[in-house]
Image 1 (cartoon, rainbow, N blue to C red):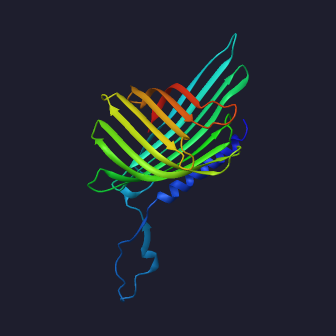
Image 2 (image 1 turned 180 degrees about the vertical axis):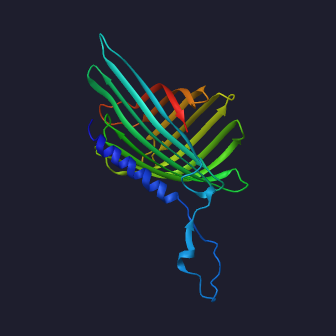
Length: 274
């Protein structure tokens, strides 16, 4: 698996940088009896303290997703997909991230080897349906014209529908991407048009979907697109285990010589939530 060690190192460094950049801390005075002689408060009476609702380590929801299937006989197929997701929402912002890895092997030859790290932070505006966001992505793919694609975007989002059951969120932004290790390593300025639709069907089922379009700003007609949809069913509430069935399509209008424009995949996963 060419370069997978470098991929994992890049993904871990990117995740660490995002977490550090979003942490918040405050300084408060610890209660203590005033010095009898009127001397100044000793330095050790002042200590850092983080309010529970602002602690970066609290309030996260997420899960671990695993899927595995294969066959042996006239043809040998091995298919693995794993992911970790996390999400945290407080009064001022909402943070989400995911790390996904897929590997497919057919007749002793790898046909897919991809790792994707997505990070996103939305700053929520008080008493408004508008929000400001920043997102970044690192993709490693062993079967592309490049080894890595790094991208970052900023923009604004608007909640068309937001209630206990349904979320319809649109966004528009600007950013850039760069392919590393391929024939074209230049930075490409891109736009972003996106839409999220999530719906809670009942207490045990939900549907999630998203589509993102990335048109190139320096070459009209070139663009990338990512579309996802999944249905999730809670199988065992006590162990927080769910069944997740979904599809994903990643499109690139300029994939490079010998590469297909579409990468379409479907999956069935077991999800353990936390």
